[in-house]
Structures are given as C-alpha cells and as structure tokens.
Image (cartoon, rainbow, N blue to C red; front, side, top):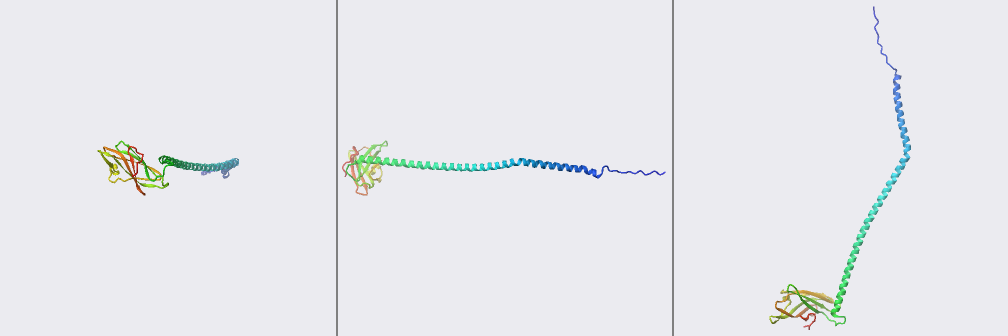
Length: 247
C-alpha cells in the first residue's frame, strides 16, 4: 500500500506592505525631528536677532571709540615729548644766556676795576705821559727768589696800544764793590728774553728773579723797548714805587 509523500511548505510571516510600515514611520519621525530643530533655530534666531544686531553695533562703536582714544593718547604722548624737548631747549638757552650775562658782568666789573685803578695811578688831572713804568716792587719768596711786580702806564695816546719788551737790571753792593746784576744774570740764562707787554692804558707785569748771595740791592734800572724810542727809568729799591730820574 503506497503512502503519500509528506510535503513541507514554507510560509513567510508578514506581507511586504507590513514590512514597509516601520521604515516609513522612522522616516516620518526623523523628518519631524529635523523640522522641529529648524523651527527652534528659526525661532531662536528671530528672538535673538535684534539683540545680536544691537550688540554688534555697540561693539563696532566701542571699537571706533577705542581707536579714537588710542589716537588721542598717541597725540598727547607726542605733545608731551615736544613739550619736554622744547623745555629742555628753553632751559639750555636760558642757561647759556645767563652764563653769557654773568661773563659780561664779570668783564664790566673788571673794566671798572681797571679804570678805577688807572685813575688812582695817574689821576684825572695828572699830566699826560707816554709809555713809562709807574712802579716796581719786590718781595722775597720762600725759595730764595724775589717776586717782582711792575706797573706800566700811558695816557698820552688814548686808544693807542703800547707793545714791546721789559728788562731791568739791579744795582747794588757785593763784597764792598758796586755791582750791576743784568737781566740775564737775574734769570740765570745767557740770552733771557725780555718780558712782553701789550696794553692800551696800563698793564701789570710780574715774575721772579734770583739775586746773588751777599748782594745788597740799591737801585733798579728799567728798560722798555718797543715801536718807539726806548724808555729807561731808575727806581730806588728801598722806596720802590717812587720813580727816579729817567736816564
């Protein structure tokens, strides 16, 4: 007896339309979610846009104000530098003027002193004289030398300059004999140059000489040689300053 062959039939659960339902639902949810995001963004932008624009405008205004302030600061710094330099220049110029005025005052004071000294020497009503030695004085020094001071004057040619050289010799006694110590011997040089002078009204010359040992000075013979005739005068050593007769 033949048995029927058993048949196996595979049945798929769910139809294609049923499978498409979950996929569509996911897409719809995603689209809704994206739309909600877009809506939120648009709403936020609309609400925040006025304040954002105002903030940006205030930022730009602040930036412009900061730039203006920076320019003002730079201008003030430059002005300060200019004022400092100007003050330094003014101070330097003022110091220079003050120094120049002080120097002029010293020169004026020196000229006034010279005029007063000259008037005391020759006197306002004294006789006009040409080049001459007004006085000569000596003073001992520590080293055994003698310091001398000679005053030369002239009031004959006002404004003229007297130039030349001064020499003198000292007459005295040494070992009981009259002796003359020459200019070269006084300076202990074989060819001692004369002492130069150049003045308009008077001049004071000074220097040092060496007298021999055991020498007693008595007189001083002064010689002035210049552009004109030489001038020779004799002074007493003991009464220096009182001119004797010129020779």
